[in-house]
Length: 293
Image 1 (cartoon, rainbow, N blue to C red):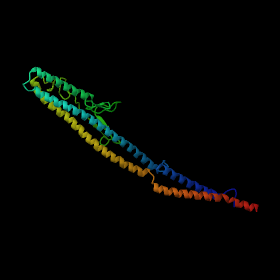
Image 2 (cartoon, helix red, strand yellow; image 1 turned 135 degrees about the horizontal axis):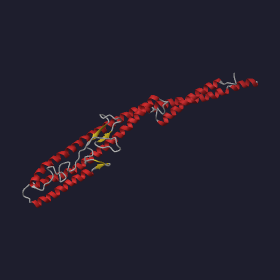
Image 3 (cartoon, one colour; image 1 turned 90 degrees about the vertical axis):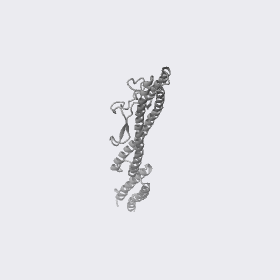
Image 4 (cartoon, rainbow, N blue to C red; image 1 turned 120 degrees about the vertical axis):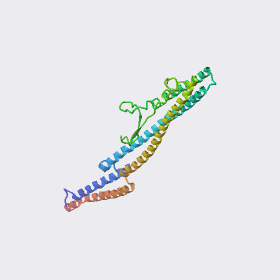
């Protein structure tokens, strides 16, 4: 028997320290719901998890970006729908002015409304914007350049987690829908749709208005195709994000049933070690009984 060193108590204390550390780890995992709370738990798993979390966050923002782009397209398409009504009225006026049953005074009255419709088309095209981005005045018809504080040209819709042009973004290009761009009104002096003040001019305007309607419909068709692409993109991104979250959960989250079993095991071992440490600490007293005896 020894009284300077209680080796048995030291051994049990080391065992107790180990069991208590395991119990603390189980408690942390159960309280946070995470299997990996620090790099010490699983260094490789932590790295994979953080990369996955970054991709998930980027994808979710990409979904919001795509939804914003759909809203932008719907704004532009709605304005083009109003312009469509003006073009139909202009063709009606041109058809009316093209007949010979009106005199010059009456034809000039038709001309006044015709030019007013053209001015309204230009006003709508210049006024239509989404979050400060003008949509129908031609600003989005050029080549995209995002090197400045404000991007110019075609609008870039970024929805992927990387920067691959084939996978992560594409551009929205919208042509100008002003009256002069469509070849109509007194701002387009070189075009057939300049005026309906004479019978001959009105006849030529009918052809110009048809061309303008086709040009406008091409813009709307392009926007419709882009909206369909964006809706498919959102569906795909939603599925990707969901699957990636499931994969991240399998790496990061704790299996509560398994961890609870481990917790109870560590709890029992800790309690047993505490009880045995108490017994081991009482052994030197036996040596005292020999001295006193």
